[in-house]
Image (cartoon, rainbow, N blue to C red):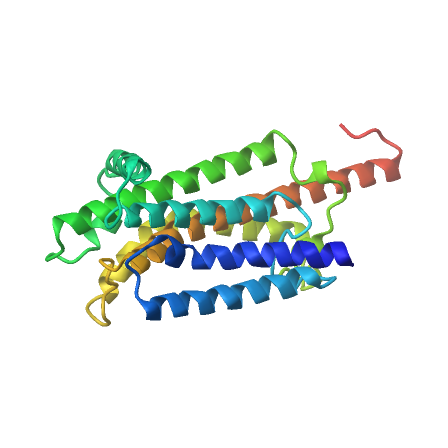
Length: 277
């Protein structure tokens, strides 16, 4: 029980640090923004602590199937950290901020081809946006997209090469997929396959759809002002991380469906007294 408490507290502190990171790294942030960030950090930390200190999960998926959530957290943390450091370079430049800015700009420039997600993020800006803002959005988009692609590549390696999650022992669908009801009508196998493919398809489409939807809605509501560093950091992070997270979830559900299908084949073969192929 004590070990579970320490583990939940550590996770809660890390999540709280994630939300407070821009306020810690950026020297020019206002006091009101600091208070808002600390409030979000406190709320997120309490939510994670309550989730992990309890015996049974409620909303966090693949809780007992590492490194799924660890990879997702690391991706968000690296994205927020690098974008905060890049934004800090405007007020307090150094060699590290210059390196990250140059790396993000190079990657963004490479990905900035017609109809690419980065190009759509750039053209989402208003016509009167400054050249500096275009450069900041391009740099942040390139860095965030690079981190999300690396995260997907690492997770694909775990799934296809290392056999995740079977390498961690028995996989409990109910515990690791608390939002998925295996008893809600129909065979669980086609439902997992359908949800997995849907998540992957939406994950691939969202980087293209989000800028287009925001640009279409800018005539009806106030557009997002990316010239504010905090807004830029969290908008670009969500734009890059949410699709990557959905693709990871889709890959995971397809992998679980494959494991269930293999177990069924073994069970049917054993019942017939035949060695499975």
